[in-house]
Image (cartoon, rainbow, N blue to C red; front, side, top):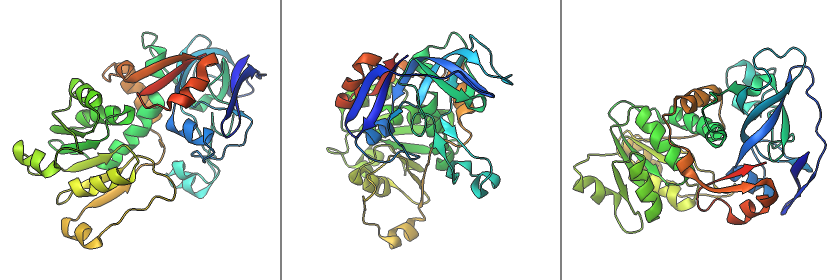
Amino acid sequence: MKAAVFYEPGKIVVEEHPYRKPGKGEVLIQVKAAGVCGTDIHIYDGAKGASECYPPVVLGHEFAGVVAEIGEGVTRCGVGDHVTVDPSILCGRCYECQVGTPHFCQDYSATGVTYDGAFAEYCVVEEKQVFQLKKDVSFEEAAMCEPVGCCLHGIDQAKIKTGDVVVIIGGGTIGAIMLQLARMAGAAVLILSEPDEHKRQRALELGADLVFDPLQEEFQEVLKKNQIRKANVVIECVGSRATMMDALKFAGQGTHVVWFGLTEPDCEIPVKPYEIFQKEITITASYVNPFTHGRAADIVNSGKLKLSELISERLSLDEIQKAFEIRGKNGKMMIFP
């Protein structure tokens, strides 16, 4: 089969690559669409993913396709089914798995990071990783189940209540998904902070009530002008030092702040504990997607999320190098093997 093999930082090669038949409890999937994640770019640059990556390996962990073959004992899906895949592989034996926090699994691994993934024509996964999709759901939307699942964990961490004012920092792919999920979770007012005019306009089309440019407008003035008392929840979706600091600056009394964006490992920001105390701010983060992929598949199956609108580049497998040059600056990049 044809696959894009990651050999070392800065080197990914499209070549003929062997694939194996599914073993006991495994499923062979013909990949129809695979999204390029920021984690893929981090790994390409030499950084660590959610689990260790030992090249050569086929990257790609956001994907959907058709079941081509099933191994012995597989009962939850059959040949021809349209499916999405949760890339997380949990040991089920360690302390964290036993106490209900499996995303901190001490032996965590992942399809497309630890094992060959979806930047290929075929991919073998365990049956437990597979979730079925309606056949009228497009494969590119289905491939977005993984980032939707990650965002769902972030929404869970945010503790949104019906009627809340929710601020999303960053209008990229993740911010646009968060915006829609926050509305589903009960937000009464959705505000987007984003310097790019195109992304602000798209956010309005996706349901944002207010958008503003943080480089040109003061957040408190935006609230005052629109007769809004405070933000109840702030979700940072960029992962930069400046926007992490903005999340704290935008927080009011009792605000939940979610640092969802991924910064560089050595990033540090100044925090004044007295301000956290005075406002009683809750600061939390969100790590991978524990038990949310099934919920994500249900939401995608429902058709209530606008996802195709977030895809900026559609590339063939032979064009995958372009994805690592574009680096997602325009939106979600999708590979079609």
